[in-house]
Length: 139
Image 1: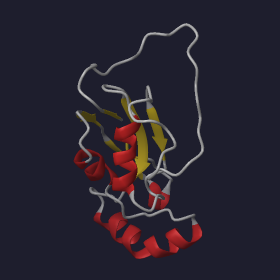
Image 2: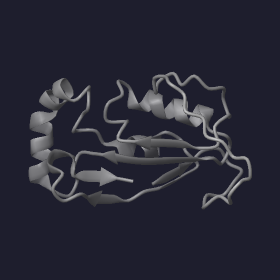
Image 3: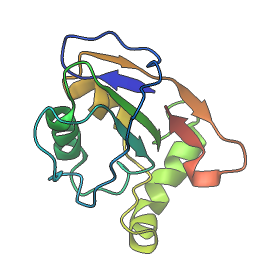
């Protein structure tokens, strides 16, 4: 999935850049240790389920992205197409939080991304067979 911040550049595949580099930094999602408008992209995989404040994390992601830069994500979410699975996710959420480093089964992450103010959001929902309580995904 892709959310595009800012307003200048259209989304799509970037051309290879000679001398391109990758910088990985350590920090918490709600207070990223980067200057505003400094990131060429942010990639988030199975992360927003575990942060304390996903709306604040998304605000930080928007803050650090350069105008038009992509935010790429894949996250497990509360099922919207399988009421039985959703009921199980809600029932076992507190156990999951305790046993899986704060990972929530009941988050509506795509709703949060859509509300975060990105210029555009392209995402799809899908299911991963055999993944049980985290089989409902958005990317």
